[in-house]
Image (cartoon, rainbow, N blue to C red; front, top):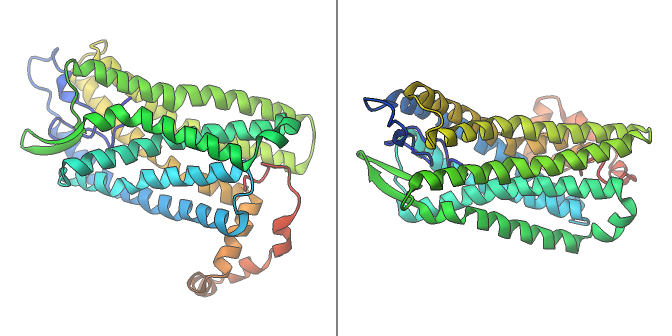
Amino acid sequence: MGEVSTTTELTDDYSFSYNYNENYDDSPKPCSKEGIKKFGSHFLPVLYSLVLLLGLIGNFLVILVLFKYKRLKCMTDVYLLNLAISDLLFVFSLPFWSYYAADQWVFGDGLCKIISGMYLVGFYSGIFFIMLMSIDRYLAIVHAVFALKARTVTYGIITSLIVWLVAISASVPELFFSESYKEHNHTTCKPRYPGNATHWRVFSTLEVNVLGLLIPSVVMIFCYSMIIKTLLSCRSEKKNKAVKMIFAVMIVFFVFWTPYNIVLFLQSLVDLGVITGCQISRHLDYAIQVTEIWAFFHCCVNPVIYFFMGEKFKKYVKLLFKNWTVPVMLFKRCGLLTTYHTDSTSSFYTQSTGEQDAL
């Protein structure tokens, strides 16, 4: 993870999901945004490509580890797999938006709808699965006895299917209205709303704010505050690691998504005419580009958190690379091969406290 801009709309000639040039009724002259278009076309393709590369590598590693070593034995594994799939669905749309940012939409109306749908479903489902993982950890640590019955693979699959249905439902309006069409000699791919377009844009923005930040934030704050309270009551090294992991996941979520949602909310105020002025609108255009790409990097961060803070996941990844010929040769050349021999494989199967190591 309201109009989640399927990348950032820069001008009426170049936009992904925001219609900025309709907000200049207070200006005696049209508000020029050509500079914003050039700004985005220079740096967005590079950053989208970076997110694509990191997202593919990190999330494919998560999927490989889950299938090769974890084998989806508990609810947490099911959620981690679905989160990785959500992130991959999200990043698979980025090559199209990258080309769009550099030039214009050349992929036709059908792909406009498909790619917009992939982006939005990946956005919503990713955030929802992070929320589900918070609930999963809450049950495992705060209600351990009840969790024995509730945290099963079957319930994990059922709740995952519900999440996918909710994510698809939340994406339907944008998916339905997204079109590829000519606008000021520039082919765009963005929602074209019927009737009062301002109301639809405000509704879309509020949808992103509520489903993408407000509800997940309330759930995560409650779950993690109760988890921390429980863990602090029993002192152990593993419990301390769990607290660090919990703080990392929660803080990373807020750091990456809060700025983007705040800017979207301010944009909705511009749409409603509460905030006026060409200069303010231009500043918001730049802010949406910057905060959006910053939010995109969140899909690359969770695998990094698991690797550096989850001991078991780190060991699984090392074992995975140890058995691959090409990575072994590369690590040998770099003098890093010994890293993969220092951990005994027997340690992979040591007893752990549920979610303490993330994997």
